[in-house]
Length: 215
Picture 1 (spheres, one colour):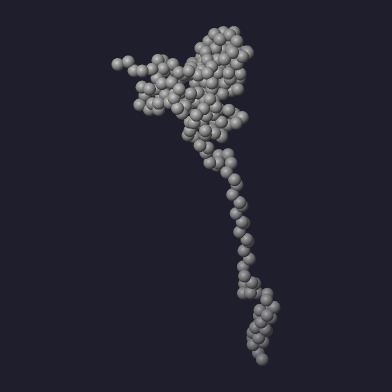
Picture 2: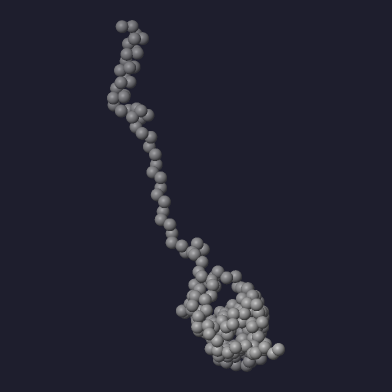
């Protein structure tokens, strides 16, 4: 046998051994792939991705039935009044639809009074400092001219205006007692024992009607 023939035969013999031994990964072994990571479970909706709370107020007798969780964080409240009132002075603090009458004894100490609203066309307001209580009531007057409480308005709903406050502990709206309607001046007047968030709404039923029209 010639030398080239011997070399060729030896090469074929070695190739056969390699194949038999399974040493050729390209021919006998599937390519290795990394396992794709499993998607993590979706996080429960919290914070900014939580569904928004209901925003429409539903008025029932004596109570706004729709609690508004987190609503203070969703609304863009605007500071429309920031006035220092001394505890021993008589002072009227007013802005937008609202006027607060202070007299000596209303405040236990000199206090900066704030009024905030998010829409001048909605009678929904925050008075501050939030939660402050008064030894002597502060008198609130709300001008409702042109609103649904105004008999001369196209949106008049024929319901007596009533003031409600948002109870932070129960997250429910509760009626503020002692209010009265001045139909002639289109104002709702009520004493407040503390500062909170307030909304003027309509009460189901009718306790008194507007003054008769003079033709």
